[in-house]
Image (cartoon, rainbow, N blue to C red; front, side, top):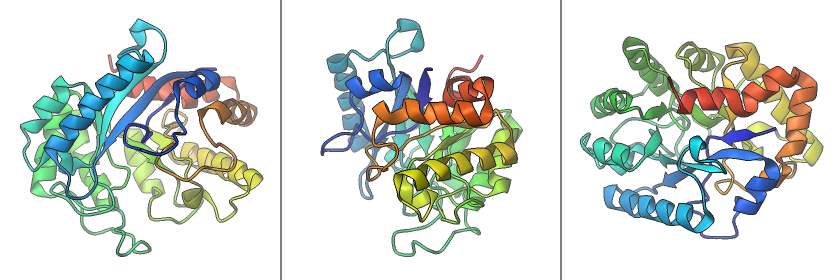
Length: 295
């Protein structure tokens, strides 16, 4: 069974990678999103350098730039809206370079808005502060350019602000790598209300594999059970068309159940057993394809 992964950090991880072409082939990957992740203080010039690095990666590994070319497709995304340097016109450059999705915030406040928590206060969930004026301008322009707004790492208010803009413009948005707060109450996970807003837009939630966000039980069996519990709850909250895969490989410590892409077929078997083949195919492939390849 083929799959699409909406988020990994292999492009910026300088250590031993979890995501390699051989492992993607072994796992049955159809398309892998590669995030250009920017740290605090980095900006537009760093983003351009990472776009160049992505192009070199595609040439070196033989990744396709679209599913029509055959083989594994590589999709360019950005993690951190501060990559724009506070200038909306930089979005035109991003679109021209092939960026398909932008995670608006990371673990610090930026020009676009506020994260769901900061590294200085990791247990304090941000609920009151959302998009700033520039964030609203940027999201509006992203939609016009066909770039998907991504609210993973964003505050609850940021998510609802994005939802309002997308509703006005008839557009979808995503949480590329998140879980369900009702299953495990970590600030990085989405409320049921947030999941429903994403679903109502026609968007998706990519299920994150970070063990610390899924469960206190970090044994292989505990993580398997937690992933299925998050999957079941996200579907219950938003319907079968909202759930996708957003591993966060190379941005997270090794999950003891799913260590790298080559391990994914065993999770696919669990999904098929729990939800049936039709819904499992939507989770693994169909829902993400709809998001990235709109009619």
